[in-house]
Image (tube, rainbow, N blue to C red; front, side):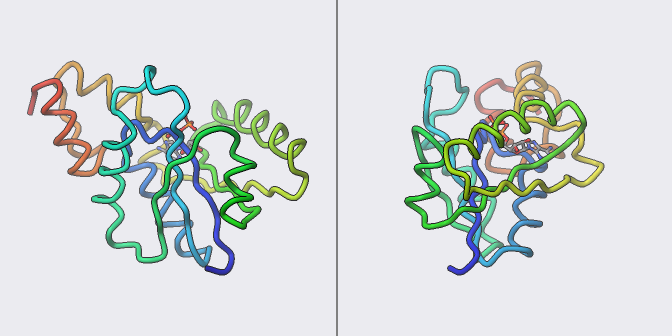
Length: 161
Ligand code: ADP
């Protein structure tokens, strides 16, 4: 696909904020590769296979989106995909430091790599996977925060409504 961009992340699990960014990206770019980072399995709540399954179930309405997994450096994965475009989502100023650091590090590794930042809808500006995990772990309502596949798995894991 022409003008394909990679949206990398942990997606542990996917939230409605991620979906908002992917929908925006799929309207701008010819194709979007949603790339699940598979570096350190132990730190994650869901194994990569489950994170991929939640993404597949949640992105069916976006035909120019493919879901992949990668490990190691993002610059190497981008080269393998034949693109130099990276998408990252921005919520609040608090994201900026980390994203700036990552972007400049990646640029040093490959000066051709361009990172494009998309701003989320205001209603998702507070939302993160860790927040969803935390609310779910206390059996709080999460149906409005995460897509059905992820919400169902969280409810199964922790109990709750
Ligand atoms: P990572 O561990 O790489 O930060 P995440 O899955 O947490 O992986 O996030 C992937 C990308 O999605 C990051 O660019 C992050 O800033 C962005 N993101 C996460 N939650 C939201 C949200 N609610 N709105 C917009 N962007 C988001």
